[in-house]
View 1 (cartoon, rainbow, N blue to C red):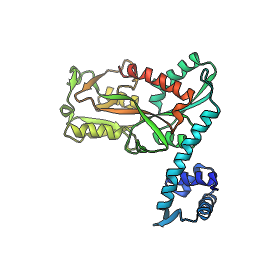
View 2: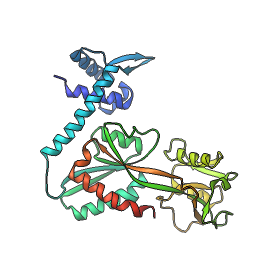
View 3: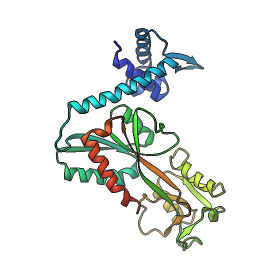
View 4: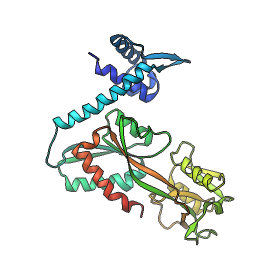
Length: 301
C-alpha cells in the first residue's frame, strides 16, 4: 500500500522543482523530505530520483507515478465533494486568491455579492501574485484563484489544475494630456516607436505583454523608467517622463493630466480562473465562478 503522505512529498518535488523547495513548502527539513521519497521508492521497488548536476531530477518512473498521483488528488477532491454534498445554499468557507488588481476589480465585488446572496458562505481573500496562487492551490490553501496568463504558468493541460478563461484585459496607451497622440481615437503603436517608455519591472508578468505589443508593431521600446505599480507609472507619465501601456482594468489616480488612447489591434492580457482539478464542482466555488463571469463583461468596459 502506497503511503499517500510520501506521494504528496513526491508531488511537491515535481511542483517546486527541487527537494529543498518542496521541503520548505511542506515545512519539512530537506533530509526528511528526501527520506520520504527514498522510502516511497523502496516501497515501490523503483528509483524515483536520479542525479542531475549538483541536484536531482525525477525519473521516468516518478513522472509516471506523478500522473497517477494527480488523478488520485482529483478523485479525492471529488470524494470530499460527494461526502460534504449540500444541495441547499452554498455554505462553509471559500478561500480565494488573486493579484492586487484582480482583487480590487473582481474578487472584492464577488465576495460582496456572495455575502449578500449566500449568508451561510464565508469568503476569505488572500492577495498573491500569479506563481504564489498556483502554489496555494497545490498546497490546498486556496480554493479559487484569478491569475494572469503568462508563459511561466503551468500549461492549460496540467492535470492538477482547471484553468478557464475569464476575460481579456486590453492595454491602452497612456500619454500626457498635451501629447501629440492624446487626441487620437486609436493609435498604432508604431507611431510611438521613438518615444521614451515606462514599462513594468523585469519580473512583472505584464512586462512580456508590453514588449510583445511593441515588437508586433515593429520596434523595441526605449524603456527609461521601470515601475511595479500602475499608478506609479501613471504619475511618471503625468510628469512627462515617458508613455506607457497600462491595462484597462487598472484604476488610475483621478484628475492626473493623462489620456488613455485605445490601440490598434487591441493588445491585451488574458485573465483566468483556476481551481484544483475537480474543485470547480463545489457549490461554493461554482457560485463564485458564476459571480466572476457576471462581473467580467463590465469590468473592462
